[in-house]
Structures are given as C-alpha cells and as structure tokens.
Image (cartoon, rainbow, N blue to C red; front, top):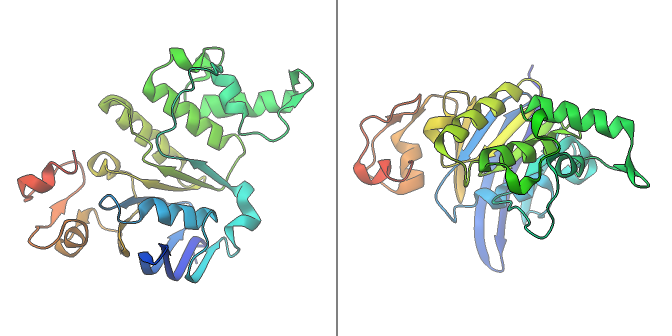
Length: 255
C-alpha cells in the first residue's frame, strides 16, 4: 500500500471572519508529482502554508508523513512565490544554495561536507558550472534552478513550489518542469502553477483549489473541475500538451 506523504482531512481556514478554504480533503501519495491549480484568491497559497505548518487550520487535521508539519520541517523543501534577486546582496550561486544547509560555515570557510552537498544539488539541477557566478549575472530560469537547488540541498522528502515559473521564459519553463518531473519517485513534489499544459505531461495528480478542493488523476480537466475554477458553461479539455474543445476566454487564462 502506497504511503501518504500529505494528508488533509476536513480542513477549513480563513482570515478574520472570511473563510478561504472550506472542509478540504486531500491525500498526496509519497513519491508523486502533483499540481495545484485554481483562480487567483482561490486559496492555493494558503493551502501550501497550511501544509508547511505556517498557518493553523480553523478546523480539521493536517499531517505530513503522519505528523504535524512543524515536527518534521527538515523533511520539507520550499520555494516561495516570486523570489527576487537582491541587488544589494550580490551572492554567488554557490552562496545562495548554501543557505539551504544548516551550519554552513566554520569561521570564514565552508565545511567540506557543505561544499559536497551544494555541489551535488547544483549538479542535480544542471547548473554546477555557474557556482561562482553572481546571481545578478544569470538568467531567470537559471536563478529558479538555483532556488530549487537551495531547496534540495537539505535532502528533503517533500518539495513544495509556489508558481516556480514566474518570470521564466517559455523554454525555461519546459526545462524546469522536466527537472521537477525527474525528481518524483525520489521525493514528493507539489507545485502551484498556471502553466498546466506544460506541467501536465509529467503530473500524477491534479488538485483544483477554489475554496474547496477537487482532485483528478486523469490527463483531462472535466467540466466539473473547470466549473470550479471558472464557473459554469465550460467544456472538458485534454491537458496532455494540447488544449481542445475549450472557449476562447478559458484558453487565454491558461497561457
């Protein structure tokens, strides 16, 4: 029987008196690659913060490998939405990735184990040749890979991404999703995305988030799932690389 990495049972949460998520149930098996999609304000980022233990649910139970997320925080790697390069702190790629390792330095020097961990993470994401470059001198796609390496360097069992392809060119988006797909099996990968067509070829499960959550393991968005995102009168569409039988106003939303 496949082990469950992330489990939410009847979870509700809101801000002040406004309910953002209502009786959410979700189970993500270990080693799978899942995408979370939905309209802006639907609760996707809030759902991630609940899973990470950064927010406490009003109601319900959240477990990560059977325990509260805060108890096993070291097993979770997280890349937040819209991380920007700091022009006042021109780190090298190596220095940025090393920030994901605890106790990185001994005085002014990195421990040899830290160097090995950082180099291994850089090789895994395919940018080991950029280790000594300033983050200000690399592309958006390369910077995003460096952030993935920072999340990987602590050897997590779960990787969580919030819109990982923001500010990345189309070719870089495809390459990034190929990278994330290569990690599944080795770890559980969960990503909030609007790039559904690009991500769809490699995902194992899809969760549509709009106050409630609906789950699909098919390579197709049913009319029921589409109506949860964009309202009624939408048609089913394939998401295995082509958009079919879909109104123009919906097509414009998934570009």
